[in-house]
Amino acid sequence: MFWYLQVCTYFLFTTDYLIRVYLAPRRLPFVLRNIPSLLVVVLPLLRPLWLLRALLLLQVVAERIQLPLRLRAVVYVSGTAVFLALVGSIAVLDAERGNPAGNIQTIGDALWWSLTTMTTVGYGDRFPVTPEGRLVASGLMLAGIALLGVVTAAIASWFVERFERNAARERRTEADVAQILSEINELRGAVDELAGLRDDQAQLHDRLDSLTTRLAR
Image (cartoon, rainbow, N blue to C red; front, side, top):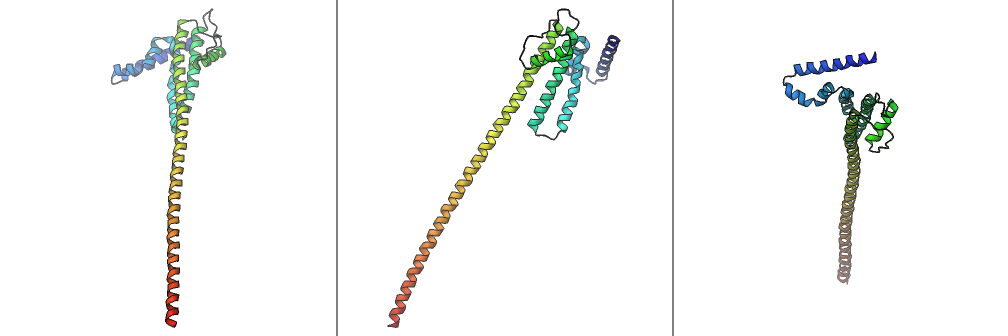
């Protein structure tokens, strides 16, 4: 029953692709822009790649979330990594489960293999033995390295931005301190001038008192 359901689903996917090619205004550019869809139709072992179309929904959700751009990128990449691990698990399980020499026979084994493959750990306790499974593994390796690189770059840029922000804050603080010191020096100069004027005023008072005393005599 499940085999017939699988065949019907594959037939529906193929029909959908052919209809979209037929309705496309420019068919050759459409085919070139949708190479994964063509591979899924031509190579049935890549049927799980149809699940990648759900990444569009993940992108829409990431754009709707009101988060900083870098945090949205991390959330989107993390969700993509989890989704690719799930798709890779399904694909490799579909390719390996029917092989007597295969050691990936359950969804648990497939998920564990996807996790160790994407994180480049590679324990070697689970590995594909069929050409189809190794093809899926190659794609998952490249995707894992790329996604880990994006996450690492995002974290590194966050640290760099924090350091630059702290350095800019320190430069502003130094500029404020220099301005305050300059104002203090100006105030000291003004106080010294006032003190000089008061001394001159005192001398004028003394002279005035001396002249008054002379006139009184």
